[in-house]
Length: 187
Ligand SMILES: [Zn+2]
Image 1 (cartoon, rainbow, N blue to C red):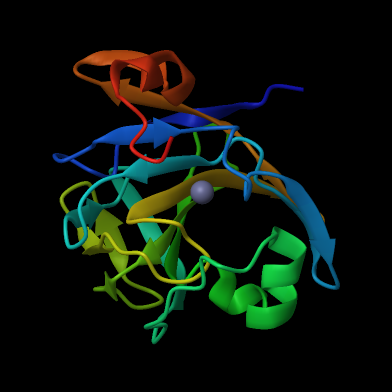
Image 2: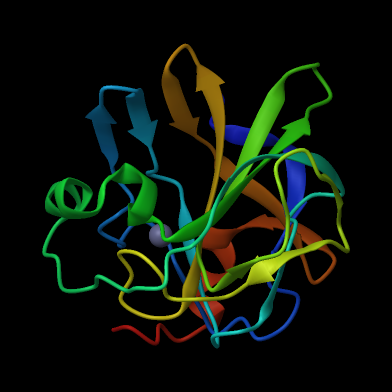
């Protein structure tokens, strides 16, 4: 099965990207709860300074989910299942936004932006590439300011992670291909 996104995305940080973590991040696993299976294996952590604007990663979309009101950071919980138990799934990713995007084959992909400091959008908002959806933060289960960025599609009650195709500095690439250009601030 093709695990690449149909759409080609942009980095949600237009400036101030200091580091990229991919599969090494402990949250980037598969887990299950009563609402289904969450496959986050291809999610990326985009490291930058708190307060930076976070943009929609695609030129068109609709906000389908928003979670806000999380002011705390819970980095000291030791593992994801423990963190989910303590925080609830809702607060694990802190303040977050999910945007739905149409694909060329008439299906849908969803982009997720987690650990935001502030959220600037509401469910139902139509989004463009210039839309600032929030600011970079460190809310929820997070060990430093970053955006947890994940693109998935739905298959039944599975959210299947996709490898994000992205345009970066004018070329199509993936986050795995460009991450070595950055030092990893959390190592
Ligand atoms: Zn992450």
